[in-house]
Length: 115
Image (cartoon, rainbow, N blue to C red; front, side):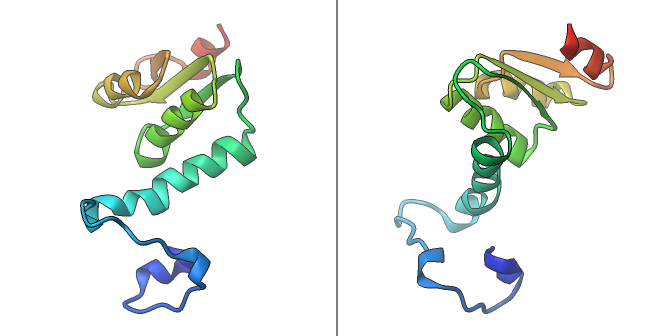
C-alpha cells in the first residue's frame, strides 16, 4: 500500500517497493503481509523497541495485533499480554505467542496488567 496507492486501480511505485510472490501464495490471502505484518514489525522493532526479556501488552488482537504477538515472541519478549474483548480472539492469541490474556469487557485491563 505504498503511499496509499493500494487503494487505486493503478499506481506508480519505486522498484524497491515491489516484491514478487511465489505462485504457491494466493494473492488475496497474501495481502496481509504488506499491511498487518509489516505494520506490526515496525511497531515492535522501532516504536516499542522490544528486546529479549521485555514484558509487553498488545491491545486489540486483530490483524496487526496478532502479528505483534508473533513478532514480540520472535524478538524474545518473555511476558506477552493480549488484551481484547472477545474470548475467541484471546484463545487464538495464546497460540500466537501470548503468555497472558485479558478480556477487557470482563475485567479492568490496566489494573490486571499492573498486577
